[in-house]
Image 1: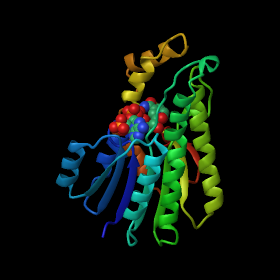
Image 2: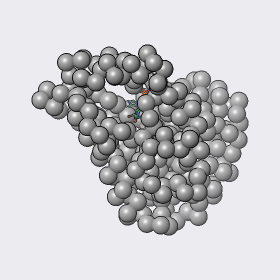
Image 3: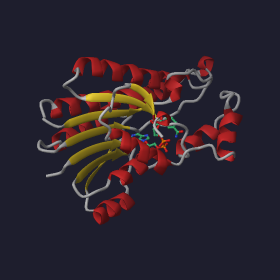
Length: 251
Ligand code: NDP
């Protein structure tokens, strides 16, 4: 029986990929979700003696997300010491000034991935682990963008603000003895998402040069460092003491 069963979305690249690799250990069962399988991760899991199940799904497709959430729940067998759900997959698209945010399906896709899929996965996770005598934790990977407005990111900021509030509602419902959740900003991290941001149209994203400078000046954090801190945070006794948090608060 696994000591820890950990579920990570968006584990194929960036922060999620680093989290998945950081969690690989004997006694860990890792369940990952992304649009593609990761052969390297499978090899790393085998070498580390960890159990791995990769679920290939487009989480912006709600039927797919629902099926995947039920599949994940069925894998959360009783008897583990820890059950972790890290809702990490996300998108910054569409980047456009509010007056130009007219592509309804693109906006809906972002909300589906950044918010609705999180809610579906969390609901099935919470149901599956209800009553388990175990550590049960949800970490939603949020962003400073959910807490401070950034021009051009009307969609992204709104999704992350929604994620923050959803986390608070979940904690209020679950109470002291239930699943504990945190909405955690990871800092500014050197991933494909930052590349996407640097490729934004300056006409729609006035902060473009600031983000180009982050990369040029070496100010971006490395995914493996951030993942290490997130994993350490997942193990803290005071996990969730601050429900809307930023990993940069933990050195
Ligand atoms: P990346 O773009 O590097 O990786 C995103 C991950 O999400 C990939 O594994 C991707 O896998 C997966 N993903 C994207 N779309 C879908 C989809 N439709 N269905 C399933 N999986 C999907 O992002 P980061 O690692 O940078 O970001 C991770 C999280 O951190 C996000 O929630 C982001 O908002 C947040 N964040 C990142 C910051 C940064 O500076 N990087 C700053 C603040 C917050 P695949 O393409 O294989 O499906």
